[in-house]
Image 1 (tube, one colour):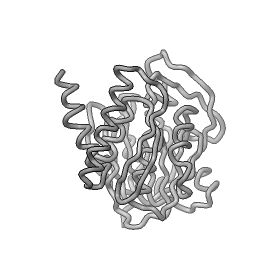
Image 2 (cartoon, rainbow, N blue to C red; image 1 turned 135 degrees about the horizontal axis):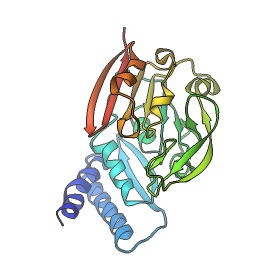
Image 3 (tube, rainbow, N blue to C red; image 1 turned 180 degrees about the vertical axis):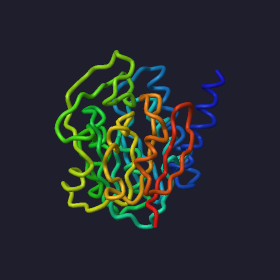
Length: 266
């Protein structure tokens, strides 16, 4: 009961406030819209995508929600502001690795509407949602692929949750499919980008192989993303060594998970 109270009367109102740009009437409408969505999923068990309209940073977005967890994801991005670190004032190129259904891509687009955002997502289901949620935004370019050490194909482990997608084996009960994989170097070459301004990553353990033995300072000026120590036996310092030419900050999210912010040293 305490959890339900917190979700419906604390976290959801906070999210509605952020997604209405301070307009009281819009906030009330957004709040009821989010309440309806959550009730329709948990009690009525609707599965059809729910059209959700919101305003953030003076921009209007229309996206399609599917799972109750989608609301938690929006909260992390728009309320908790996990990615609200902007060391570069006007980035031209932003790479979103692990784009999910487009939450962070939309967040970055709201703040930097002139930036080209390359949103990369390997899961076929998530990619369809990403495509649906960003189809009217020309500055967001989507790529269906995993990112890794080599370009080719890789196994993707898909769990029941849309968040449980990884090239790493997790519970052992996942569905395994083959998906395209691309290196960061090849990704930048494909879009004629010499160096990204921002690379955001939330790729469920793939970060350890992705950044291994590459010159990160030649790929991007800044990095921000989650480090999943619970999905590897690699030490945190070993991972951090990949960013020796960056000023790095580590923020503990939960046990064995950290948010890393890294800016190339002057």
